[in-house]
Image (cartoon, rainbow, N blue to C red; front, side, top):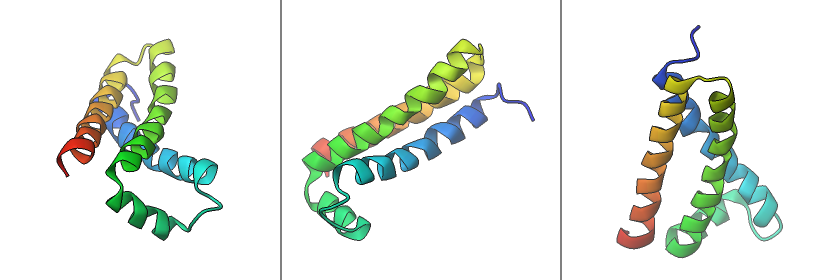
Length: 97
């Protein structure tokens, strides 16, 4: 399988922030509530939801740096486009909804 295609980077860029969300949950909110309670509180508090989503998006730096050092430019484009898609979603959560 070829790794230097944009769709591979896009899928990696979409799936890793979900893992990052659980990492942020275990680091910040583990003792305060369950995962369902956290999701319920994030739906009501948009400011903290945008902070948690932004922190979970930082995990995309790992494959981005990897693709940059290995010169996988097309996969890096997919990671950047998925990150930009998440950034638009975070701005919508923070200011519109």
